[in-house]
Length: 333
Image (cartoon, rainbow, N blue to C red; front, side):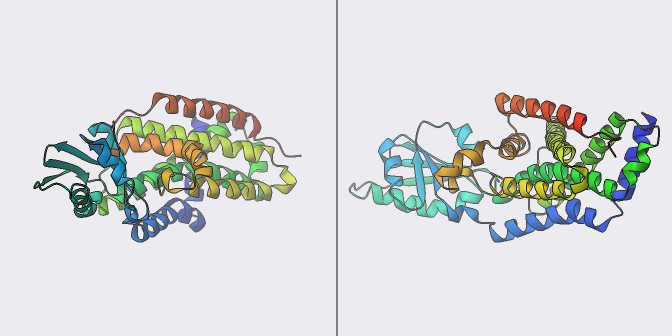
């Protein structure tokens, strides 16, 4: 244990002095959050707003003919709140509209559409608007960025440190020390978890500035660690399978894998905004599943789907086992 702690301490001190490392674990998450937050802060304008109608299924169908709203029925208010839907409860000529802070700007348009639907009648309609959450795009974005942090730190940091130490012949010196291979692997994993927590803390502080108040819990921290272990194990597999005379290929493969997973996910936008051909992939690829669980924990405050959690746990165990077997300390010819 003492050797592991000393190795972790050396890894943290060595890498956190590197400006390139600081960029990836601190500056990069901040930049991408600011970029999407400032450019797409009103991202609801780019796709249909889902409206749940209770009391008139025909009104829901009529909303589907507009270019703004997508009407649905048979959805509970609790589910609508969790997914940032507008919820309409109809009682005669009285309409109660439940909405989040983000979607409140669409309520006047929705009221006009409803009045247009009922224009053949001579009744007077009364609208009551109730803001049921402070949900904004920043809630969606920050929770997505946290998932991306586990992806990028897990894969890129695991491979970056291993490949860099190999090129600098640090691995060769470590191989002559009493440090065992499993201690080296555990040290790398702990280091990756530490920088993930640093990156996550930085992004959460930025999110608080934008009004995002996360529901931090032990379940969230535990799942963040698990997701980092999943991608860290995948990074170890990539590095372990790469011929050491072509170690640069591991870094190329890492980047080719990370960036498509990052942008073809639900991190920045819901899967519904993507073309139908790739929508299923975007919704169920590993990063999207992890982000979905993170949102349930820190945004909606609900228990995540246990099936999704079990899937992530299985992948984590498989990747960690395979990565631990492949990432050997004494593997230099």
